[in-house]
Amino acid sequence: MAKGKQIYEGKAKILYEGPEKGTLIQYFKDDATAFNNKKKAIIDGKGVLNNRISEFLLSQLNQIGIKTHFIKRLNMREQLIKSLEIIPIEVVIRNIAAGTFSNRLGISEGTDLSKPILEFYYKNDELGDPLVNEEHILALNWATQSELMHISEQALRINDFLVGLFRGIGIKLVDFKLEFGRQWNGDEVEIFLADEISPDTCRLWDVKDERKLDKDRFRRDLGGLVEAYQEVARRLGIMPEGSNIKEIKTGVSKNLTALKKK
Ligand code: UDP
Image: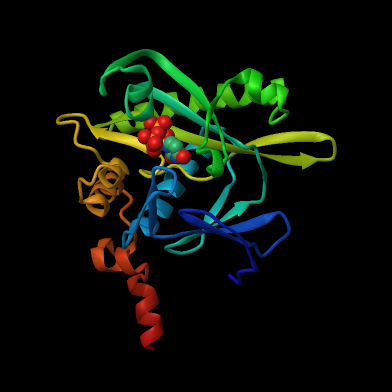
């Protein structure tokens, strides 16, 4: 599928104009960043795994009636998505204390929360994505009251579903981040889940030994990031085409290589 011009480059993905109006192509890079871009690396194969894992999770969510921007996966690194007006809020859902939550409140990592906690962050790299509350979002017109209610309901439904899905494959969903966007149909607005859900945007711990299967392997210099993401894909039953680490790393499938040789 022919890509249009590049319209945005983020830390882990690039967006190109799509083949039809209202569509975009989302390209998953191998770049890893943490601590607001202060720590950077290229990790061969990460983009391929995130593309496949996010495709799977968003498709599952589509099936339970959550509207998402995902249309279809195009190849090992790209997917076709709906073009949306992104709401400048990162929604974090927490089931177990970890990361900035533990640091901010002095709650040890791994403490179970008696109910899921929803947090909102203002999506702004220059400011380091500050924590905000509903009042900020409404007063600054980042979203309306009804949009915010809808987003919160959807986030909790997504959490319920994903906690169960991961639990079924021996993984605890500790916390994760969601983004949403709007599509205008005349005066009517429809909200869709956007961005990605992958081990880059979730904390995933093995149920038995709490081994980290997510981006904390990079943030905390634990090593073995691609192997951990591969483990998540394997347990989800979706290892990318060929299931061969070399192919995952290059992002070229057997079929494509075979075609090129002809
Ligand atoms: N998260 C994310 N992007 C961000 C910030 C957080 O995907 O810009 C995810 C992160 O991977 C974790 C959850 O949201 O699963 C909560 O992150 P936290 O606030 O603890 O911050 P972090 O430790 O990631 O800086």
